[in-house]
Image 1 (cartoon, one colour):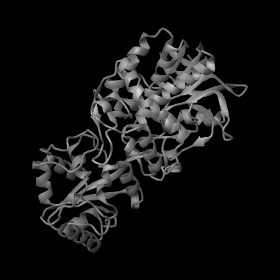
Image 2 (tube, helix red, strand yellow):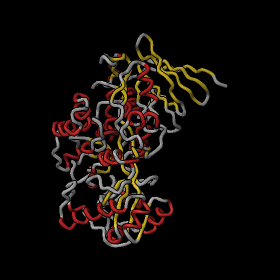
Image 3 (tube, one colour):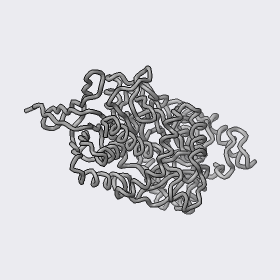
Image 4 (cartoon, one colour):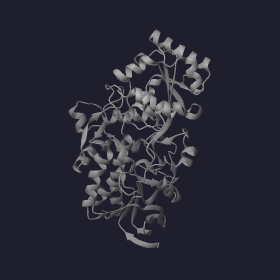
Amino acid sequence: MNHEKEMQADVVIIGSGASGLCAALTLSYGGASVLVFEQESEPGGMTNYAEGMFAVGSRYQKKQKVGLTVEEAFNVHMEETHWLANPRLVRTFMERTAGTIDWLEEQGAEFSGLFTISPFTQRVWHQMEGLGKEGLIAPLFKKAEEQKNITIVFDTEVKSLIMVGGRAAGVLAEGKDGSIKAASKAVVIASGGYQDNQEWVDKYCKSGFTRPVIPARQLGSGIRMAWEAGAQPYDMGVMQTIVLVPEEELTSQLLTAGFQPRLWVNTLGERFVNESICWKFPMAGNALARQPGASAWCVFDDDTRVYMKEKGVNYVLGEFYDILKNLPDLDEELERGIQAGKVFKAGSLDQLAAKIGVQAATFKDAVTEYNECYDGKYDPIFGKDRAYLDPIRKAPFYAVKLGLAAFMTNGGIRINHKTEVLKEDRTVIPGLFAAGCSAGGILGDTYEVSTTGGSLSFAVNTGRMAGESALKYLGK
């Protein structure tokens, strides 16, 4: 039987991912009582699947003589976001990142080392021991459980904010045992993005064909509640898009073989991109999003199949697979793909064109042009590095289906560099703060790989910032 339960705390936090837990601990250490609502039965949200986080000036970087400065990282980020990002927010966030690595280690988190996502970017990616669930959420949650002034309520979905006199004064939520009215002096929205809300993806994102890599009920409810309270919608449409073989695990050898900088053709049989852009995976997503049906094929020949099976690959996604490791199960994986309709194999280019449904003449022209690039050791069409040019001559020929997916969205609520939520006129909504993927201002129109791990780092750092700002608001 439904009933209304009343609860109370200094601050209510919506969500128990990286930003929510960091905000909760910061508030707790500052003497505030905290009530965290989590819609799932365990903490973490999308953080559970993260590999690592961005930082600049950390002790790991100093030890490895990485000389990148905050000024350099800031300028690169702002240039590559075309100054669409909020510069004061970006600068404030970046200045905190080194200290936050130390703070996380004090909470029990462990980092396995310093990495880069590509040969062209700085070593800014601080990877955790294990994925985010074990490497970050577990120690943060353990710390939170130890705090007497933090209460975390699972399987409870916040439905709306309580606003009194234009100030955030709590939330209304629904749990297993009925409705809950939680009164507070401040609220932190840390509920993540909206990548599972297909209506919003179709409405706001240029890559409307996108599907989430990891379904996680990220529907944008916290963003919607902020809008209803008067917050300015901001930076909607920013997605971390990625090209994947549909419905394949990130560790799949079939995915690894398909998402390579070989020849990519769209559903018209035309080449459309410098395929080595896969190193900047969100931009590869942008390119694919502009193609018919956001779909394409990765094409290679039997020599390339043998090379991948026996020698290795030219590209890997993050650290999900070792770039020096071969694909020993590739033949079985390709056969599995054929049975699932994700892979086609043919003895001639004409036959392969027929199987993937493209015009044979157009497709063969694309292959001929590509082979000429290889022979000339230069790509006059898209300027592809010759290290990634491979001929397509030896039958049988293969085509692996490529589709568009997204890790997460970034943005929705306008905040300032103190994480205070802003109205359209840029005035503050008192007592309301936002952190992590719910908040806009860190990116332009595309996720930026020069700050690899930026989403998790932004979540952790803005969580801490929101906690500090809420403490100041409370007068603590």
